[in-house]
Length: 63
Length: 403
Image (cartoon, rainbow over the protein chains, first blue to last red):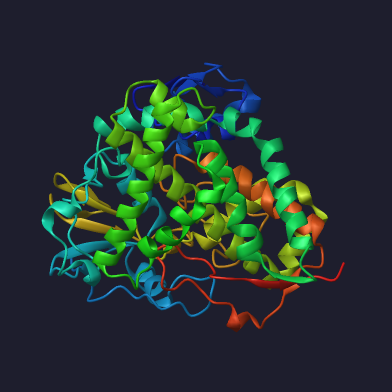
C-alpha cells in the first residue's frame, strides 16, 4: 500500500491526523497535510484507508 | 426519471432529538428529490449521506450566496440584491482561489496539535465554570452557567477579545440567528457586530504583538482590514454558538438516555467516540447547508443543472441507514460514528472542528464527573427548544444536583 497526498487540495481540517497521527501531521504554517509514512505497515492500513475516505478535500489517495 | 416533488420542507420535529419525520419519509423514498423554493425555483433536496458528501465535496457546486435561489420566505421580499453578496473575508461563502487564500491564513492556528496543546488550559476553564455552578444552591440553568460561557471564554481568549465585552456580540448573534428576526433586524445586528470587530482590529493594529489569533493574523500583513474584521467575526460567531448548543442539547440528550449516560460514566475512555455520536445524532442545524451547481452535474442518476440550488439536510443524512445500518435513530455511544457530516464536508468543512471536539470532550467528561447525579429540574417537555433559531439546541436547561 502506498499513500500519496496533494497539499494543493488540502483544506487543513485535520481529519487525517485525528484518524492516525502516526501516518499524518500538519504543517505548522498553514495546517496542510504532511505525510509521515508513505508505505504503511499492515497495522496502519485500515486507518490509512479511513483517513483517505474521511478527508473532506479528497487530498489523500491510496494505491 | 419521475422525481418526487415537495412543495415545502417539513420543519416540525416530533421530539427534541430527531429530525422532522416528514424529511425522514422523503429520504426513505428518494435520497435526492425536488423541492420548491420561496422564489419559485424548483430546486433539490438531498437527504442521503453519501449524496450529501458527494455534493459538498464537488468543485462543481458553489456556496456563493449570490448564486443561491431564495429558500427562506423571510428573505424573499426585503432583501436588496447587493446585500446577498459575500463580504470580503467571509471565506465560508467564497470559492477558490479567494477561499483558499483566506482559509490558509487561519488553518495553521487550528491544527490537531495546536488544539491538543490547549487541552489543559480548556480544562481549567471548564473547572472554573463548574466551580461557578456549585455556587448555586443545587440548581441552575446549565446553558447560562456552563454551556454558553465555556466556548465563549475559550474563543474570546483565543481571538484576543475581552470576555467582559461579550454584550457587544452575544445578544446580536442571537438576533442574527433568530428565525423570527426580519432581514432588516438580522442585518442591523450583524452591522453592530461588524462595528465591534472593526474597532477591535483598529485597537490591535494600534497595539501590535498581542498573543492571540487576530494579532497573529494581522502580523502576517496579508488580509485587508475589512477582510480581517469579517474573518474575526466569522470565528467569533462560529466559535461560541455552535459548541454552546452542542453542550446544552448534548447534556439534555444524555440525561434523557440514562443507559447511555451510564456507559459514559462507567467507561469514560469512550468520550472521543461519544462526542462523534452526539454530533451525528444531533447535528444541531435544522437543515442545510445549501449549494448551487455551477455546471450541469449528475449525482446518483439525477441531472442537476447549472444554476440549480440544492438544499442538503444534514440531520437526516446523519441518520441514513445506508451509512449507519441497524439503528441509526438510536443514540449509541459505542457505535463507530465517524464520517458524519455534522461538521460538513468538502473545502468548507468546519475550520474549528478540532477545537470544538476538545471543548466537548472535556466539557461533557468533567460535567458528569463533577456532578454525577445531575438531573433535569423540569419536565422534559418544558425544556425550551431552539426551534426559532438557525442553530438548534435548547434556550435553557434547568438542572439540579444534590451532592
